[in-house]
Image 1 (cartoon, rainbow, N blue to C red):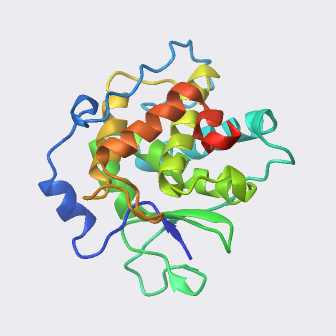
Image 2: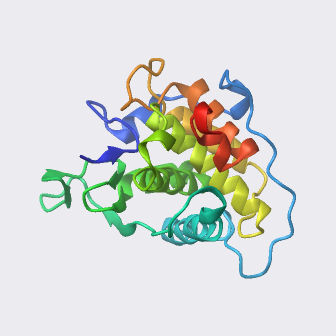
Length: 239
């Protein structure tokens, strides 16, 4: 079964984004995102604003996320880090859309497929989000990578609120990459992250393990990872 980035049931992504009010981080009810670390970026480092195209930002986001986990894995977990396979872009509206566990990947969505151990994203989702801000694709990819990480952990390290834990891990990765000087935040990137978390939040409070949580919960989970790192995303009993 695929782990979707957001639940799309009746309305299309573009319709939902059209009617949503643009939310800044300060309006999310859960407090603003922390300030990113002040770093000096080496010339070779990916930058959320460096790619002029959505494809360029996707490639940079994959590199940034994988580099963070390969560098820091053994600080938190035992064993050898194995990245998920990057299936990458797909068209969920196409008749030949790839499948996960025999079910076609969802339209206008992004997923981690446990059975195939891969991450993938519908390009309609990425293009629509990229128009709102290039930080969008970094968040989506870091979130889905977080599900791949969960799939590699002992059950006791996986929070019941799996989706919120994936948001937390995304915050740990993106802010951790900034501390590593492998990613630079531009002015407005934190607002873009808050906007993405809010736009793709559930309409009701988190009540189910498949729910992503409301805007306040998503921003709060992401902020916890940004401030406390990977350890802050683990269940209380093992922190």
